[in-house]
Length: 421
Image (tube, rainbow, N blue to C red; front, side, top):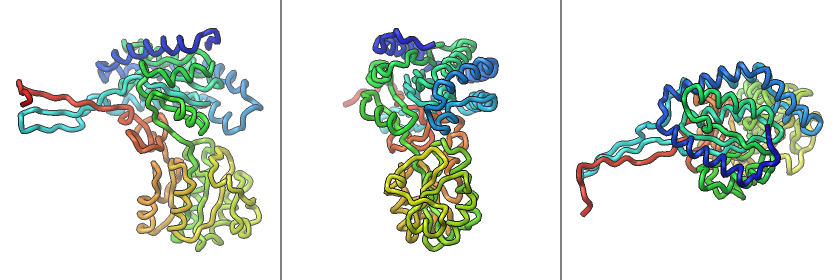
């Protein structure tokens, strides 16, 4: 239960000390022990399902009528979603252990043998909004990669997060691993976030997952290194050589499968050469399920489309709204996507492999797709197990952040009495 009497600075200091100690204990943990902890945590999650649903009902009730339905959907847990969380833990247990991997070996002329090996980052601070399952996924990934984690979920998910963390800690204890490898901030005081962002003494990396406001706050205030996941203003571009029916089906899924995920297509870019064929068909497919906002040319082609304003081109709706822009060919399409994309995930729909290759190489996003729904931008779909998020920067990790991306490396140098002249 959260405790509003806690001093945020002292509380974060205490969490950090315990996390650092736990991280040292995880460095030498065996793969079997980590996998046992994950499987036992999955079992504990299933057993805690009634309590977790009750806690989640309290969380949902606290924001009902105050937040949009897309937000509520991200917050809400069901038996199926709890089972998916438990399965994700078991899937991570089946993945290869990333710690200790030999990344390179080379011999020097003086006889020194040098290895570059993967090691845990140390202590990760995870700051996220609304989705309780992020706490389970992030904890599991950090555990398998040998990192301790301090979770700071949104205040709206605090009851759910508490139950999830208790299940993760139950798994750790059952495997003989440090309980404090997974902890959660026990106060909703926002000063605790500021303290976590400055906790360089204990925290090695902070990862925010949420809206642009949260990510920009972390970017601007953190002195701890960060791995940023900006918003998902994802585009699907329909090229003149697209299979129109295929493109309609793919984009319908990319937009409406789940509108509140960061990989959802928010903007549909259409080649002028096929606009008169495609626009009415996508309007038919979306129907009353999605509001379409387009430029004047798109509006002229179908009166079900509302006129867009300048803000629409740069908006991550996270809801049943999509923008439509008509462009003059491949180069114009690439330029439009590059200008307005958040560089998360963008796609081209075309049967022309040359055009597809040009788009894939020219669009500077973490994930670029050809003839596929942008909602495949997901660590699980990439075969990486669960993910902490999609990194949109270019340093250390990019795209889905899974086990390998939660490792750093160090050099091991083996000699036989060599001295440097």
